[in-house]
Length: 335
Ligand SMILES: O=C(O)CCC(=O)C(=O)O
Ligand SMILES: [Fe+2]
Image 1 (cartoon, rainbow, N blue to C red):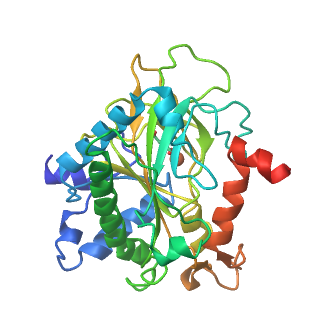
Image 2: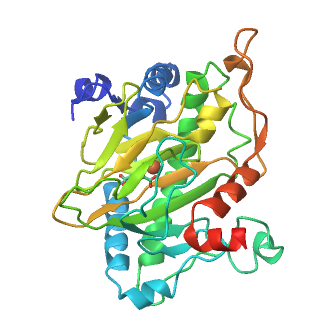
């Protein structure tokens, strides 16, 4: 990919392809240069594509391969790892209706199955022993050699990349580069492996993933082999992000919207897998620490622009979502 192609608007025009190589290399002025592109894009579609991100392709391929191997397991082996109190492990097709979506009245379950992975605690970690809320042990398939290594290698690399993007997002909001550092020193991260079954016939209100906004801070989507992701513009049309192999599609999520008083409001997106084959995705969700308090940043308020949001403990946000979106826990919550 040439330098020009990555710094100019992407092939689809509206969602830019940004070369983050200079920022990662610490070139003078690179953070602010990137920040200006991020700001433009976050005020428009909330989606951008990152090139020259430094994540080795074998790590990405290895994670996709691990996902394919996992979902190919017999259903009973997957169900043995079903999610419990919190989303770690297997979530079968039909278990998620995004009821908290503020942008679409979702009624039918998503046509996908998922496997959730988070920080890989040891059983004797104080957070586990003390039973801290929204923290738990990953659920590993016993007969899938290399699965834990491949997914955790990807997870760790993505966590590092996400943290290195924070100064550019801070500068995009006219804040000091280290503004988000403390809130994200121990970030809440989730790697979700997803398999979408083919959906060759269009059906009303039936999606691989119904229209929603992400609830974390920013999300990183390694490019899937097959298309299917669509982004809603402010005008209400749906577009596909540039599908450039080896890049990441990044989208803003609810907490960035909240910090920025909706200057960088999250954008609805959806997935329809109208390919003839299974579609895989490996979104990496990056959020603040559970004990971070999300407050509107000083550069996004003023006499004419009062804060739209009260301070919010991220843990409270997660606990609320955890009760609402998932059929098995909803039954418990209403009991
Ligand atoms: O499958 C994709 O490309 C997107 C998935 C997504 O939007 C999500 O997991 O929040
Ligand atoms: Fe999403």
